[in-house]
Structures are given as C-alpha cells and as structure tokens.
Image (cartoon, one colour):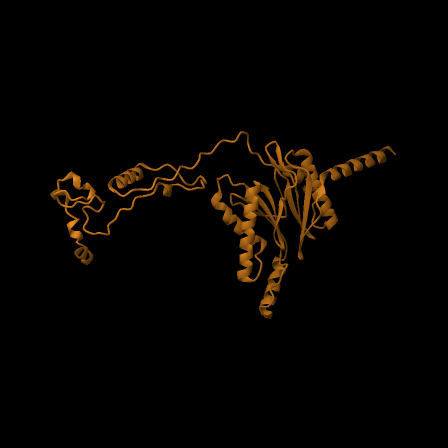
Length: 344
C-alpha cells in the first residue's frame, strides 16, 4: 500500500463500472479516467499478475510416447483469454516440430552374442555384422564393449542406443569408484542399468546387454587392516564370474549362460550340449567360436568376424579378431577327414 501511495497507483485501479470510455482500453487520457487493460484491472493488489503460458511448455523436443502434444479445451481457453487481455507484444510461438516420416522399409536388426561362465572365468563372443533390414550397414562393428577393467558388455539392438548407454554406465561406475574407492559389483552395475532403462519401457529404445564380469578382482587398499580383512572375508562369498542380462524394458536376469540376438536359437544348440563348468580356456574358446559360426551360417543378419573376450580375476583380455570363413574351412576339413576315415 505504501508503494501504491508513493507511485500514485491508486488512480489507475479504478472500478470499470465508473468508466464508460472505450478509448481508455489502451491506457490513454481522453477526457475520462485512466483504465488499465491489464489482467489485474479489478484487483486491489499490484502484484496479482497473470502470466501467459507459452505454447512450447506443453511440448518436448524428445517424444518418448509419454507426453501428449494435444492440449485440453480448458488450457486452450485459458491461453486465449490471457493473450487477449494482455496488451504487451508477445514473441511468436516456436515452430512446431517436424512430423515423423514413415520408413520406406522395416528397420529390422540382427546379431549373435553369447556369454557363459566356467571355471576359468567368463567367455563372451559376438559377430561383427551390423545389419539394417537387408542391408549390411557395417561388417566390422564392435558388439562387445569394455566397461571397466573387470567388466565387459555384449550388446544387441540398435547400435547407437547401445553405444550411448555403454558410455553412461561407464561414467556412473567411474563416479562410484571415485566416491567409494572401490568398484561396483556386476550385480550392482546390472541393477543400475536396469533402473536407468526402465523409464524408457514401451518406447523405441532397443538395448539388450549381457554384463560379463568378475567380482572381487580387486581388494581395497590403504583403508587399514580391518577394512582389508573385511573385504577379503566378503570376497570369499562373492568372488568369481558373474553374468547378468539387462533389457531396455528393465528386465534383469542372472544366470550362467546367455545368448542374445537373431542368431541365438542356433547358438544355443551348440552351447547347451558343449558348455560345462570344467572346461579349459581352449575348449571354451572353441565352443564359443563354433556357436557363433553356426549362428552366422543360418542367420543372414549375422556374420563376417568373431570377437572373443575372456574375463578373469586379473581383468579382461581380447583375442585377435578371427574371420568366420576360417571356421568354415576348418569345419569342411574335419568333415573330409571323417569321410576318409570311414572309407578306410
């Protein structure tokens, strides 16, 4: 009230019933009292403003299917009444976002990834062909992505989505390690990734990852003897190979054998009959290579090369990339040798 007395605002806030001059809508003096066309015309307080709503507040640049772009009738009426009673110039609304254009052909994806645990650690294998419907987009893509020294992830789905969420997960695990001075377990990393992906359930996000890690590979040092002994005591229960499957809808599964992708049914036929806990590293590598080869032989969306990662307590190691044609010739040579033995 003191501010109104000093600035003489009481002359502006006059009841509209005492004024009948239409030219006063713009606040000009034409022989009649001042009348304000602002929305606080009948208000007794200067600070009772009605702020107009911008149209872009109801829209989002990323449409995940959770935000409706259509406005209800009451919101539209409120905006029209607010804009009509506010005489100040308004900036033009932003241009509407472009409409989605239908694709000329279905964007189907295909891949073959597998991972299994045995006494020597965890073995992860995958082909290197990135396909887009009938098109081979990249014959030498990387489908096994290292997360940190004791954790790798096999990826299946949209390549861009998998690469993005791999970087996000790596960042979060690095921040966790800096805060707590220890690495997050494989189960914790799987739970974190599952919680991050769950809000995108029902969208076009396509990520299917198998986290392959070894828990207890490092012991925290520099925190005192008691802390180290506690870590060693807990490590006796949690050390060893760990496998978790995480999907973009939030699914999280733990197991000892996973195969994901369009070629997984063919890979399972080899893995189910060959994978055992007592395998050596060479035997496990041979089974993984053969499983990927069988899948690429029947699945048109998988092929080219095979990548193999071995995760142990000392970290992950990568074998040299092998061309699957070599496995084809080895298989052909084995068949010919068997035929010769049968004939003899």
